[in-house]
Amino acid sequence: MAINFEVRYSNHPDDVKHYGTEKLRKEFLIETLMVPGEINLVYSMNDRFIVGGAVPDAVLELSTIDPLKSAHFCDRREVGIINVGGDARIRADDQVFELGFKDALYIGAGTIKIVMTSSDRSNPARLYFNSAPAHRSFTCKRVTLADAEVAEMGSMEQSNARKINKLLIHSVVETCQLQMGMTELKPGSVWNTMPPHLHDRRMEAYFYFELPEDQAVCHFMGDPGETRHLWIQNEQAVISPPWSIHSAAGTTHYVFIWGMAGENLDYGDMDVIQPNEIR
Image (cartoon, rainbow, N blue to C red; front, side, top):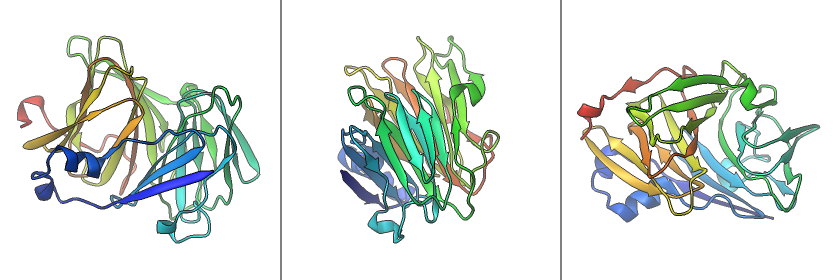
């Protein structure tokens, strides 16, 4: 079993204005998450947020990494997992949770042992997860799409008709600061989070999937008055700092998972930027 990790430092928005394509990709794009038999992590200094992926073709255990300086991964952290592959079985101490496709699991701080397996090794689970520091411990809980708080937004006329599934948010499950959900674009729509927005009190990470191999998503980021873009492939993620807009458009419809951490738990706390204000 391999656990791979890297550390990404915070970036000042004035500095990012001078980044070229390769520098932008190095700092914000996470290209490799889902590798059979591995756990891959990126530890971001933005809110000490961790983005991770695991493909358990055998038993994988989420153990601590050096930046955490802790005996166990969840000694001072909470974790949210969403399964984007075959059925999974996750053990959190003495509890066992079965996760189907697009099911989510919240794991509270203080959990000692987290073990991940696939129900069918020929169709392994593909587990995307986020983690944030937690000063309180809450109960582990499985959340399915049927349990989600759902919002239908956008329109076909504006190419942004989408269903937002709020899975691991405070109105569904108690968390310390982590929030996660999944947005599904309807066929014929390509824009997510349009109009774009900012929320200075929390950062965000996006994970794009259900994207055909020959298609891509263009993720827009940066200061609203001087934006940048990143071209993203299937099962890749992007770190979005608090000062950056949140928006993307694909060459076809797709699904993405959003995860957030920061000072508040109010999903609607954001500053909307109108399309004609973006530069």
